[in-house]
Length: 539
Image (spheres, helix red, strand yellow):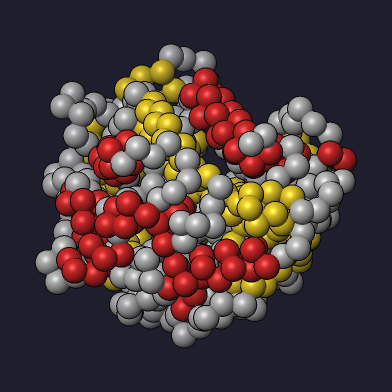
């Protein structure tokens, strides 16, 4: 199961795929009844994407995105829960995401996505299908829907005329914004109650989260998460309570509730760690000088270890994502590395979110350029630190982080004792050639054009320089990965084996881009920790 939402009738609508293919189909379950298929895809070609606010206020309809009409596009489709039928609502040569129903159910907010920094908003009548654009299109300007206000305005996260994302109320008739909160940092998450009376949002302050909320347009209140990170955020129908997921580096995944009247918060649910909080460490936030600006970086130092210690460079995926001072459910193995005595250096290089529009957009059509300069700067910083053993350094990353890992071992081959590549992009040309149809338009803007940019794409591809690799490698890959096809890892492994290099290749036949099944995750992440431990501590 990949996403879900509740209907006003108490039914649970879920989107699930098989084997990580991301060809999600919808399923319906009433708390007192069986699970029923809401959609079908016998040929295995249709992708359906479900937002958390997909259900209409009366619980009778569900709006979602689908590429059933054309494999290259994501249309908005309405499913009628009583008749189990679907009808297209908004069709166009674009990628559309449902942004929520108005409180009276008469309007649907839709986001048109061009890339990760360029989105437009439309309002669609769910009965007539009449659609109208309500934002002014501009390149590298975001408009992300977060719900509706009681007065009929849309709640939107935007960076229009700003370097950072702010929260505003958008009048769908005039297109005018009223700013609700314009912090020095990015507004990262926001939600409005179904009634539209209460709003809550999270501000990302240098990687740490701070909650803010208001009711009936009144004064804004706020609460620190005490060094934690907000992962998800929702409000009850009446806005009296909020729920959020809190992550940190030293505590397990937690669900908290917040009373919006009193500001009182309490933990409602937690998972478990096999070690105590006292055995884990909080990171230090440092800024490493780079040729294009200082690079924010979280550094985890093993508790009680004697310098110099081995260290792992861990570039995050995305690339338009952000490493936070916390470990999610599939990152706790990173804490295990630190617990075993290995330092962890976690940078947010150019392309990362959370540091403004220009920092994020710098990676567009420059993969292997500005990011490589940053990675080189971080690597040089690591080798200059007396606390790290420069003869025992490793690099490890997944997805785009795998691309960054391959950049490191091909462009700085003499630095690394070992490396782990988890489904990394190896060849920018084949990545574009083999992309799923509804990603190709997006990837052309993001990575480059196959015809115009081919020479640059070849030069920037780690595969072009793969003969430079000197260190042993562990490579992990999901057989069904629709985002970074298995061919990317196959190329690397075949060439390294032909060169006689040491490489271990593990393919998970029932996984896609993320390794999520418990047994597979235990194997992959346990294997990663053991590989890095052996190469950095035991040899």
